[in-house]
Amino acid sequence: MYDPRSKELDRTLFSLDVVCTVAAFLVAFWARNLLLPEAGQLNLYSHIFLLPLLLTLLILFLSYFGAYQNPRYATFMGYAWAIFRGMALTIGVLLSLLFFLEIDYVSRMVIIGFAGLGFVALVMVRAAMLAQFRQSLQDGSGALRVLIIGTGERARELARNLHEQAEWGIKIVGHLDPESQRIGSDINGVPVIGNIDQISQCLKSNVVDEVIIAIPRSLLEDAEHIAHACEEEGIKLRFMADIFNVQVARVSLAQVGNLPLLTMEPVAQDESKLFAKRVFDLTVTLLAMPLVLPLMAVVALAVKLDSPGPAIFVQQRVGLRKHLFPMFKFRSMYMDAEEKMKEIEHLNEAQGPIFKISNDPRVTRVGRFIRRTSLDELPQLFNVLRGEMSLVGPRPMSIRDVDLFDRGIQRKRFSVKPGVTCLWQISGRSDLPFEKWLALDLEYIDNWSLWMDIKILLKTVPAVLFSKGAV
Image (cartoon, rainbow, N blue to C red):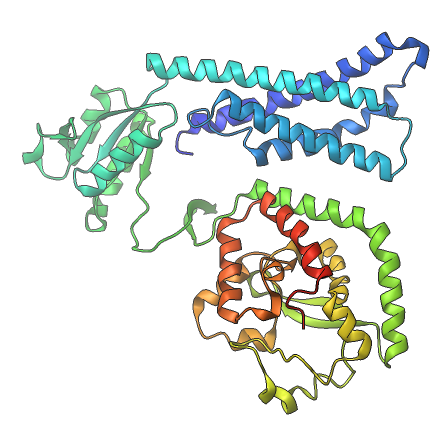
């Protein structure tokens, strides 16, 4: 998102969504009392408590499905489909919570009525926004006027990208060049209107919204003069940040005191989508707990009866950004398994840094069953609740395995939270070589979406039931 007006539009759209959501809920409540008086009058205070949860879920899902996509790249039908999915998922989660928590005093008719009214209101807001945006593009009233410092290939590439990506339209006022002899020439039809020393006069003589520096590092000493000129005229100054020849996913600027810090991230993940992932993890895990806890009690008892020692095995694993955390599992091996590791290291059947053998003598009778059915992984749901793991993500690895990594790219898997299940889990598990395992982890990191998480979770069930590739 280049144009700051897009952020302003996002804030406006968010505010309108909140207002429309609250209004639709109140209208649905009023309509229920008006149309069905014989069923009894509902108490507003018994329903109003739903609004914070309703707003949180709806805004979260609207954001995830693209209801806040920039109007330059969106269509009316695209917005309508995003709102429909966001609303449907919100209502689905809300009704599920009411059912599991046995809350009977909340009218389902109010919720269904809200869904219809809210959908229509949110769609109408975006229809009006699209019409206003397209009118602005047509008459050019919203075009951003930019002065580019530089005439080289970087400046030409910048001009091309601005025309392609400036959401509200772009008007390049001109170029300034360090060399005076280039004044009067043109760059892709845009004139060179002066040299860098003339920037103050150029800013006074032209309507300029922004100045962008696109000159090589060797000429950056001229930037101070440019910055002072922009400061005097009250004009925003930007500079191209590709001053290092590295590939990054996102560049951002932060400030510590008076010092600006340029941040280059090799893996860029949208904070709102990460928040949606966290809410999804917590919701699914908490809803699953009434079913999972009795099963965990049975497994724990079986482990205790089968061999001496605690039912839960805790091991330090390498998590997000290589921070260590205690991972919980049901114990599937005898108590002296760690000590016997060196004795059987030569029997390793897996390639790469991982250790796997099909008939590990350290595994107990119950351990073989719970490993084959992945029941030993159930306590990791507590790691999910603690925020150390996600339901879906690269499997957490032991310190031993990580110490054996021989390539830097293998550590990219630590840029996201480890997961209870992953692409590896549904693609063959222990049958896969380590290189394929790593490739699947990197594929997940580069292409992650909430919908991908849902598909992996759904595919995990048959993979576990049929024990495909389990050791």
